[in-house]
Picture 1 (spheres, helix red, strand yellow):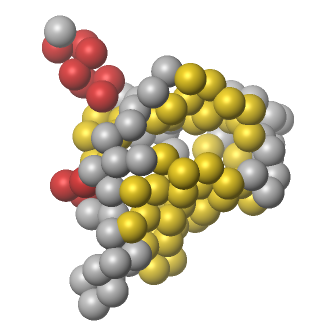
Picture 2: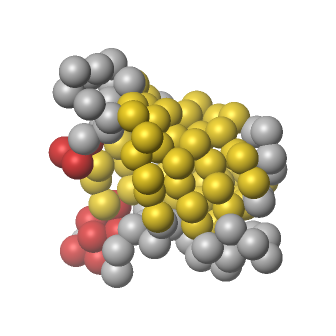
Length: 110
């Protein structure tokens, strides 16, 4: 099924293990994969808008909004606009593939 999001890492290096920054793009009408990270993450909305779900609680997000997502919290975002939803993802410590857990696989296995 995939993550349903386009991610361009702009800063993610083992030489700077305390922080990573990525620009994320979600096409109109798309909901990203339900997942959690084992690292702290912030979303900063740069264009578009959407419905962000953290631990089952949904919040409307628009340009300029910033939200903190604690390690282990389930999360996904739905682009509710007509154009792309673009946001920065800032992780501390840095994001690596092993910090990502696909929660959709877990719900289908149950």
